[in-house]
Length: 148
Image 1 (cartoon, rainbow, N blue to C red):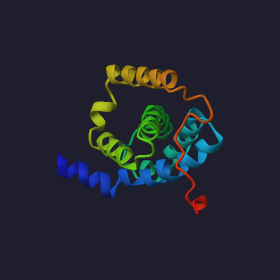
Image 2: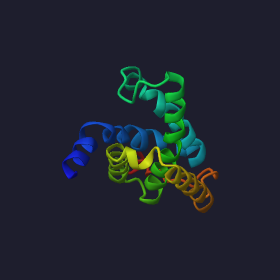
Image 3: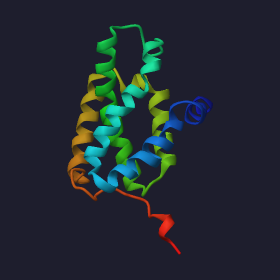
Image 4: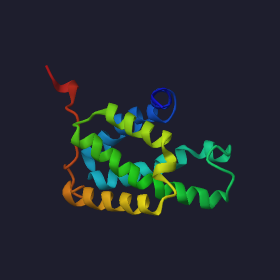
């Protein structure tokens, strides 16, 4: 299991986090709230996987239905990733680890009605506790170009 987790973190889904949370999220949080940044990232993150969907990696079901289900599944994960990034003050490692855990244990996260309800509850709690609708409530790394 550890080997699979490490492989996924380093060679597949986990390596996306350097771009999504390492670059895009902090840039967006400079101008937008974490809520808006998360929604935009989720809406871009799903089409990013379109080649895999078209190749049948995620299943051979109805194409439109598969995209809709995946987008609904990506939204709570995107919120959890934003929370991890902001609370850890920019740790990409935690985001990579979470992404790898999600990808290796997908059957635990998707398909269970109880898990779906738990994810919705987690997102609501995160929104309220972290006040993710407020601009400036997310972590943005210091601008290193301005240090003398």
